[in-house]
Length: 386
Image 1: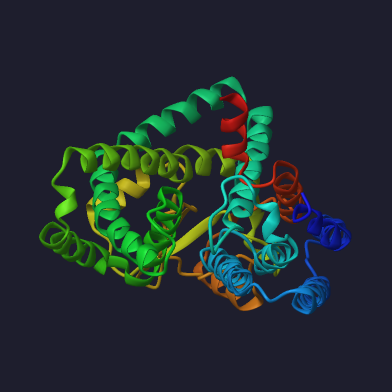
Image 2: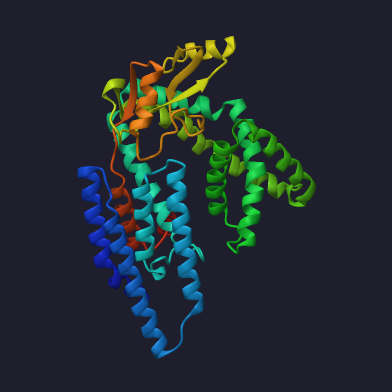
């Protein structure tokens, strides 16, 4: 109980940071760096006072200092990594880092992960965000759209080509990720392995493009040779469970939710009315050559449009979790003047932009939820039921 009382040293700044950044994001669409800097300075000063106090009374707990450092490094990696993959803006990433620094390690009692306890905060933020967004979607959905939602999900989930791709990614990448987690002392944690496998797969696709399958096949062959654990019934059962979870999440991200979200939370804007900061809901792919089969496929897609400019084909279609070849190369902060000029030169008349929902309040609510349940919300619910 005494350790948990540390939260009261940080609670004033947590509440201040949450309120001021939520208002700024909601009102102006910005999270100011001065509030992030103030929060980080506050955390540094308070921790310095606490550490000095305990040093004068007893001795410094070196394990605590190391874990405090590794947790901050983890939050920094996640904050900027999620921004790099377009999951949130740079401001949201920095806000996550600040809150991770402000929440004492002693808060994370339920589902505690040594060295990276703020993983619970990250999960709580996205779980809360998912249910709020899902609720908004259901509120706006019509019956016909709901049927379409279910159909899109099932088609994506049962797609044979996507199934083979998922098996290859999971078999090859999860092995490497699991080995790295063991080397750095994070153990054989299923949740961490799935999270970092998904992030790694997105990064590999983004960097390697068409070379991805060759690298994955090589990694898979090496695993068949080096990893003797795969030749067991226990591995098969675990892998099938992991594959089901992977496919379920992927089907939501690339099939149902992504397409339904585009219909509900986007609007068509004339190319001439695009402004810096707007976030596109569609990507534009550039292809110098396109086969008749590909052309037919795009023509059959009701939400895709092809424009030929000086012999070069430009395909405009909805954004997706797995679409990485974006001619515009837009970042999560939105369009720049240079990117808008590139779009204007192509020849499209209109393009869909997202109706942005401020994410700072979601992060703040996730922080409050973490403090209330003292850790991972899923494990808290599980313990409460059982």
